[in-house]
Amino acid sequence: MATFKNFEEIDAWRKSRELTRCIYEVTARGGFARDFPLRDQIRRACVSVMSNVAEGHGRGGRKEFLQFLSMALGSANEVSSQLYVALDQGYISDREFQLLTNLARETANLIGGLMRYLRTTEVKGRKFKPGDLKPGTKN
Image 1 (spheres, rainbow, N blue to C red):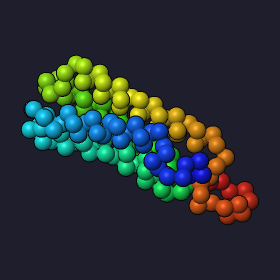
Image 2 (cartoon, rainbow, N blue to C red; image 1 turned 90 degrees about the vertical axis):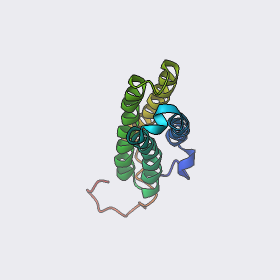
Image 3 (cartoon, helix red, strand yellow; image 1 turned 180 degrees about the vertical axis):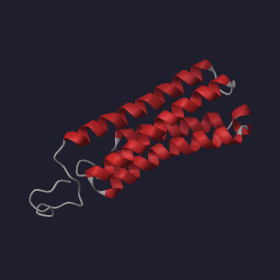
């Protein structure tokens, strides 16, 4: 998008990277490390957040970016839900749960804020040049 030269500049991507690092850390120990389905699913979900923010940015258009941000938002919420399972199974402490759910919520809030911005901006994206659209059409 025109306001970001690369996806690494996007706060939502940075926060999702932090979330992913923390999730990998807690899932590498104890019972969490041995619960392969949950461990793998929560890891995939947090990696999906990062990946969808980056891929959406890379598409170069506002509508596509919004579509990928929507998927990233869903994955951030999936991480939050799976953290409840981890807490209920005793894989993480109450403190870790609070830390990780707050991080997942911060990530989701940043994604939501970026989505609100993109819905209101006139910027269509770098793949669109003035005159690319015919009169009367929308991006």
